[in-house]
Amino acid sequence: MPDLSGKVAIVTGCASGIGAATVRRLRSDGAEVLGTDLDAAAGEALCAEVGAEFAVQDVSDRALWPQIVARAVTAFGRLDILVNNAGMVSGAGIGDWDDEAMFAAWDRVLAVNLSGTMVGCRAAIAAMRDNPGGSKGAIVNIASTTAMAPLPTDVGYSASKGAVRVLSKSVATWCAQRGLNIRCNTVIPGATMTGILAAAEVQTPGLIAAVAKTSPLNRLADPSETAAAIAFLASDECPFMTGAEMLVDGAMMAIHPGF
Ligand SMILES: NC(=O)c1ccc[n+]([C@@H]2O[C@H](COP(=O)([O-])OP(=O)(O)OC[C@H]3O[C@@H](n4cnc5c(N)ncnc54)[C@H](O)[C@@H]3O)[C@@H](O)[C@H]2O)c1
Image 1 (spheres, protein in one colour):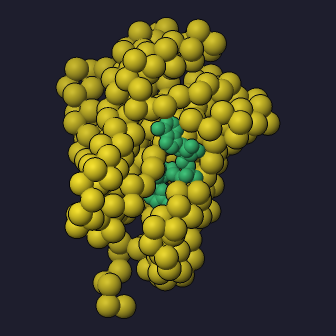
Image 2 (cartoon, rainbow, N blue to C red):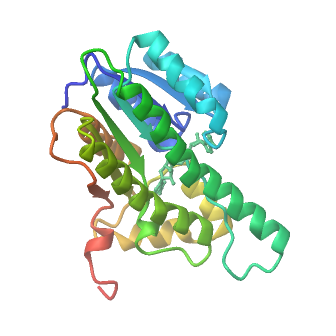
Image 3 (cartoon, rainbow, N blue to C red):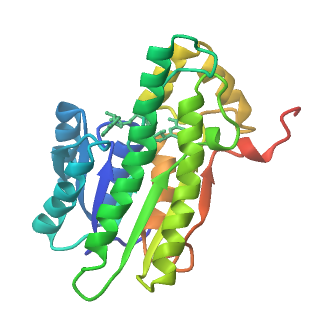
């Protein structure tokens, strides 16, 4: 298990699924954690249970990000880890011809999944640069296998996750070239049994059964299995890993689709 004692983390989308599992995992590995979510009741309950701080946050609210980071630094004295996990599906394909609904869904999913991640990186780097003892940090952004094999039924979700992969590499190399000792990596989950998949099932009936079959393990991931990869990338165990991607997909992307 990575040792995260003495480290301070922010985890967005902490109220459910992979975010909740990540808060639990980082706490059990020794980190202090500020969890954030739109869902105040569930986020507050989860964080109280594991001894984490909680703040209500819409990650697409740019003005709020510096306040969230300041809250972690004020509470715990530094910021070592940001997990940009909050995300949503939009449920709109390219040929959904209701322009108003389509463009609203597109704008929202890009604002949350992509812009929220970018603004979070900016705010975190600004704090990580000023850490006591010198600049240091680890950012983990959450993409999706839909960034590699997109959903025809959700162009905005798939495109936003594809962009998160490239965003992470740009952030990683910007920090590396400036000697900031701030790493940025991407975790790419496959089908994981969480609320977002339940929501996607409503948009695309049969999706859960179909995606379970796409892993040769023939099952969905438990969110704790994704959280383990996030904790590793957030830790000091992998100082040469930056601009990298870690698939947690039960070999979904490793097998020929015909088999
Ligand atoms: N579950 C999967 O199969 C799967 C696969 C690939 C990638 N992912 C990604 O994993 C991440 C976590 O998703 P999950 O599966 O745990 O889903 P989830 O729905 O269980 O959890 C997402 C959390 O994010 C919060 N959230 C949504 N919009 C927000 C916003 N604007 N600001 C703050 N919080 C917000 C929700 O309230 C919720 O608590 C997402 O980025 C998702 O795209 C999930």
